[in-house]
Image (cartoon, rainbow, N blue to C red):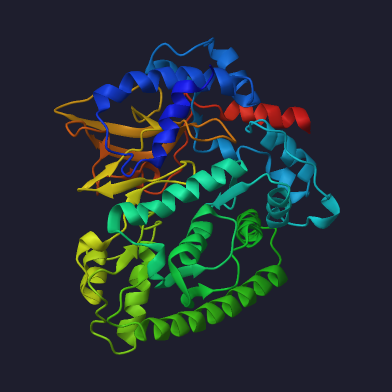
Length: 449
């Protein structure tokens, strides 16, 4: 029966502690599950079928067979930029189909002027798409399914119970250092935490002004125009006015949020946001006259995502914990990314892998499995996520990790995760090896235009 072993591993998500397993017991199950998922997804995902045909892989006999079939972290933004610039949503949909297990529904193009509109219309048609954007302004679009959406958020939300015993019945104050709306998975997670665990009367977001991918895309377009010498003085001046107006609005919102946090002093709360925003709030409260603002010791500090390239003091995390009077163990930490169905929760000083995620640590080029040494394994994190229903779950990330192989399960050591682009001084982390599928995705895009 196709998917039987894979589905059994995914079903372990219902366990109280699914990350507690013996890796020697689960490794043969991973191989059998990989064989099943590849056979299934090859029939559904055109880009995977094209890649498998090119490299001549018809089945999975070893973990090494998976490596050339993995998509790269750039595959989900390997569409021609003209599709966005010209508003060719039909062609963008055909491109997305090459990466999806399902047909992309037709939408009313007359009602779409931005990529945000496009994502909303697809979502309304039961075709969720999660988007992320880097400094290049080129968004990644991750096709999903309704089942993916519910599975992901059920796992993410239960992490608060796994790590800190938070119960939905408590209805805690929730402070979110981010907007209440936007197309990213992180923002939806924040909303869902607030809905499940929060007191509606004491749930505070930084702003109700949504994050719009279109704005980020426009910024990138202007940057390209400035570099090319084609931006007009009027365009530059208008952009600066818009940025100044927005900065003033957000500054007022930070003051309002800081005042709301002051009113929660001494209470147990859930305080969510990436590290740059967490540190920024502490700086804002210090400017308001607080040397410290103790919260209840069982407060939950929900962070993640690293520093996002922001230059912070070396001891930024210690400063945040000290300011609120919290032990570092109150961090609801983990290691994850939008491409994973569920993050690796931090348990007993390690990021623990969920049993439905098959880890593949590669060399820096992404062409081969890395070699362990002294009970540890260092390299580029890659994986096959068996739980993903809307797309192929195999991906090579842009992260270097250090893995502890001596624990009972696969465990990433906190503090060792680093982006290869950062290690290279901010230069692009382009995978040009045979283990990526970007060229095939671009080729399929060109065939549709």
